[in-house]
Image 1: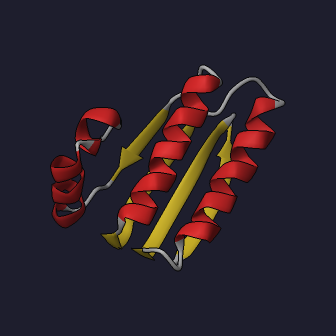
Image 2: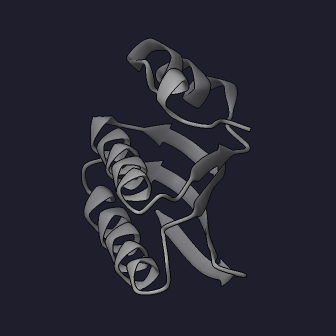
Image 3: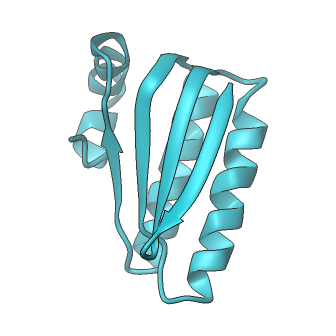
Length: 104
């Protein structure tokens, strides 16, 4: 899995590609935790997760997105998920994540 993170005017842009599975989730989680800690010092965690290159997401990847949402909620921030392929959207729909995430 490839993870590219950029801070654009206080909003963290996560561009993800590949499979977000149990082997990739620890790196994904570390990137989110790092950004969340940095954002805490600057006023709040706001993030956009671009999933255009994501082919598969497992429960481990869903857990990291849930953690990101909780971090944003605690810091009065926001998260959004963009460029979601149909197969990933179906996973979000089946698990209830479509109702928890701001999907654009």
